[in-house]
Length: 241
Image 1 (cartoon, rainbow, N blue to C red):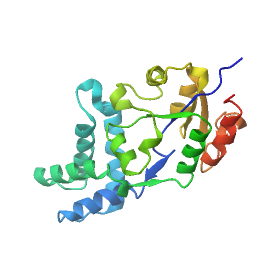
Image 2 (image 1 turned 30 degrees about the horizontal axis):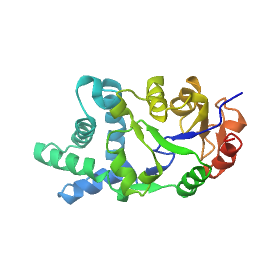
Image 3 (image 1 turned 180 degrees about the horizontal axis):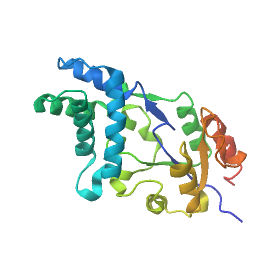
Image 4 (image 1 turned 30 degrees about the vertical axis):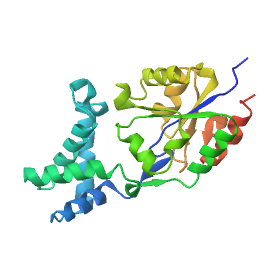
C-alpha cells in the first residue's frame, strides 16, 4: 500500500509562470535604454543560437566549470548582442548586467491565471509545497517579486544543487529536504523528460502539465496528464488519506 501524499514539488518556468514578452523584445528594449537600436527578431534568433551553444558547452550555468548563474547569463547576453553587431565592451557589459538583474523583477514574468488558486488549494489539503527547478539562484527573488515565495517550504535550483533535471540526484536532494519517502511526494511540471519521467524514475508521483495540448504524442497515462493546474487538487485529494 502506498504512503499518503504529503508533499508536492513544483517546476517553475512554463509551469507556474512564464517570460512576459519574448527574449528578443526584452533584450532590444534594454539595449534601447543605452542608445542601441536592435531588431527583436534578429536578437531572438541570435539568442537561440548562443543559448544552445552555452547550454552544450557549459551545462547547468557552468557550475562544474567554475562559473555561476550571473557569469553564465551575462556571457549569453554579451555573445547574443555581439552577434547583432554590438561590439563596445562597456555597452555589452552594462546591458548584460542590467538584464541579469531585471529578470529578478515581476515586470518580466507573468504568473499563469491558475497558479495561485492551485497552490492555495493544495495547501488547503494539508500538503506541503516546494520547488525543484532547472533555474539559477535568482529564483527566490523572482518568486518573492511575483508574490509566490510564501507558498513554498524550500527551493531546490539546479545551480544550487549542482545538478539539473533529469539527473535523479536533484530529486534525491529534494526528498532529503522533505524528509519523506518518494511515494509520499508528487511533482508537477511541463517537460516530459525533465519533470515527468525524471520524477517517476525515483518513485515520485509525476504529473505532466500540457497546457497547449502539444504533448499528446508522448506516452503518459491520462490520469497523469493535466491540461490546467485547476485539475491538480482533485487528482491529489484522493491520495492524501
